[in-house]
Amino acid sequence: SFVRYLLGRDFPGQRIGPEPTTDRFVAIVKGDSGDKIVPGAALCSQSDRPFRGLSSFGNNFLSRFEGVEMDSPILNNITLVDTPGILSGQKQSIGRNYDYEQVMRWFAERADLIIIMFDAHKLDISDELKRVIELLKPHQDKMRVLLNKADAISTQQLMRVYGALMWSLGKVMMTPETCRVYMGSFWGAPLKNQEQAALLTREKQDLFDDIAQLPQNAVMRRINELVKRARSVKVHAYIVHYLRKQLPYTFGKREKQRRLIDRLDREFVMCARRYELPRGDFPELEPFRQALTEIKDLSEIHKLDKKMVKEMDKVFSVDIPNLLEAAKYG
Image (cartoon, rainbow, N blue to C red; front, side, top):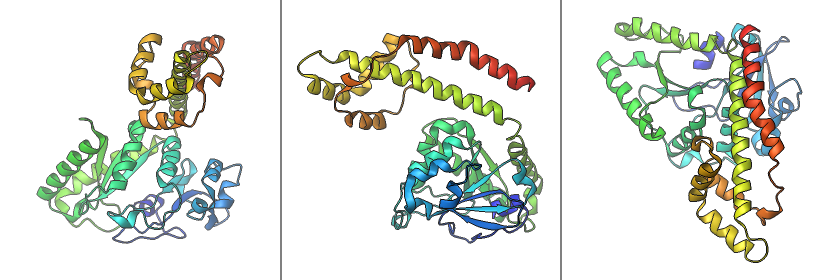
């Protein structure tokens, strides 16, 4: 109902109900030739669309992905992606023959704004939703939470529901500061509880202002993502360089490499100290450990090119400031 509210009208293939009804990823894009549904495989083949990278998830995912081309003012500058609803219990994993969490990670890395929806009557955070929120942590600056149908409860109940939601999110995100939570009623019907009319109107306007600013801030966000990516690449290169230097020249390489991987958390700390790297730029421990176990011999990886490191430092000190300056006046 929220997507329909943003678009101002119905869209092809929409499914709206009290339970999570979206069983697929739906990308809603600008189209000038009438409303139509585009199958996922065809959408990923279009060079003028930003979805070509999704082809790597295979046909099992592409059969659960579709595009909707339609004409709506909000689509002039942004693209909307509606993700499958998440149910509690075993139902959430039945029938999913693709890597749902990796697909969500792919979209999160490329999205400018991520909105997580909760209904005022259903605040339970399932195991799968918890894992999704955890993998969204690196993109916390882009996350917003929307408490929908807030007019369906009294003002006193709304205060309690809002507090319970903030508490639950704080536990999942493991941080005292959670993302912005908006309250509203996005289903096109008159408000049931008029006591909250002024509050919900201001909340709705704040959310729409947030969405309206996306095109204006797009360049700055791209530069921000570039900086984060470059910092991660630099740290990755130094981690591999550090681990490679710990290996013996002749015998016992495999055993030494296994011990390094086993105590990778300690090696991260040592690497950060030696090369004065920020610990906040280091990758997640377990995925990195898993990736290292697939490498037979770290010593076969090329040595760190110090010239390339200097070039990267130049990117941070010269090129990025120039980009920011150009974006400010462009």
